[in-house]
Amino acid sequence: MIVHGRFSGTGRVRNWIAADVVRVADGVLAEHWDVLQDEATEAESQSGRPMFGSSFPAETQICRGKETNMADQTSPKTYRRVVTGYSSGKSVVLSDTHLSTYAFKTIPGFRHTYVWTTDGTAEADPAKVDTALPKSALPLAGGSLVQIVTFPPAASRSLNAVDPKAIAQEYLTRLPGLAETFERDGSQMHATPTIDYALVLDGELWLELDDGKTVHLSAGDIVVQQGTRHGWRNRSDRPATIAFFMLGSHR
Image 1 (cartoon, rainbow, N blue to C red):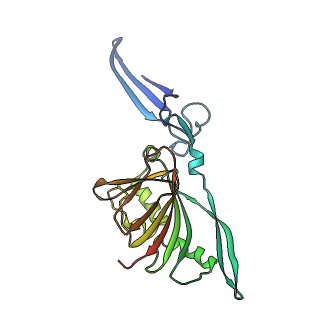
Image 2 (cartoon, rainbow, N blue to C red; image 1 turned 120 degrees about the vertical axis):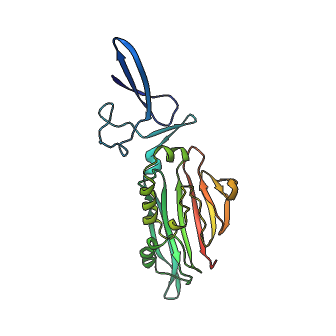
């Protein structure tokens, strides 16, 4: 006999779904097993049907007594980009637009925005830049690239883990050039042939270097990354956003 139940209000990130498996032999309890797992969201459900009630629960995290709406973490955000240049010898606004943020499907809460790229020339056509941006997440030698990344809390990433191959494929599709620099052990450690100025815009991040050494960073902190092997960690209970200004080098 199997009895299902749902446990909420436990202080965990997700509701717990419990399955009590009981075997009775000759009227005597012979075996009793408890199986616990996190309640699936609608996006994770295999059948598309909730186990309890007529709807899926709201994707709400309860971390350290604080509630964080997962929809706020995964819904796309826009950044305004104003580009100046010259027209008829006068400085003008060439483009004033809002850039959509890409929300990763395999890692809920992980967001990425391409902002601008150059090949080293003084001025570029915004329309041509927007066409070229998805082609590489690394700048050419002598060029530059600006991108913004939001890292979800590590706890939510582990809870929503999916097939590593699917994650790798989405990285390759969205971040060509950069994705290939990641080590294949799942550590997220990587090194790029760039000089990076990384400005933490919001939240907290931990920069990991060799030998597991880490540096704790908060909003307003700036990292000058000189092509070193590293990985970014979000050990907090809320998203963290960082802007990368990358300069292509010849190393």
